[in-house]
Length: 145
Image 1 (cartoon, rainbow, N blue to C red):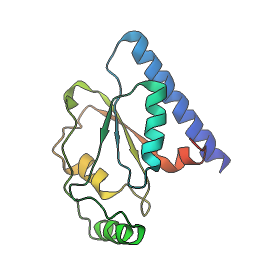
Image 2: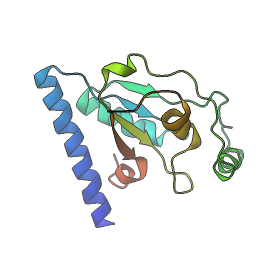
Image 3: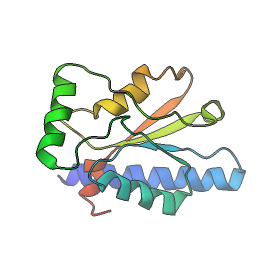
Image 4: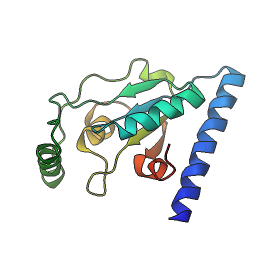
């Protein structure tokens, strides 16, 4: 648990340092592509944006998950079990201008929710030559961020 907290703190410090360096050098910001159902990941992203000024892109399932917990988990689990890539709303504007993306996600059944996998694997975006930095909500949640 302590190792996980140290790793999360180090990741947040690195993101902050990178963002400050980008601001100083007036380079492209590193955007955060994020998915949140319950609002936990959204809160973490908002905190990172406060520190870094990062651009954001919300990954949204075209057909929203149910708002009730049990029906949502049933839908999401069925997607994972059957390797279903649900349609998502839109794609980030000016994708090509960015060299690095932070992808912020909760962990559902030991993996990213399937709309995030749609974004990364099936959206048609060309990830060649780009760096993807994963931000796992569970890491920063342990730090009460």
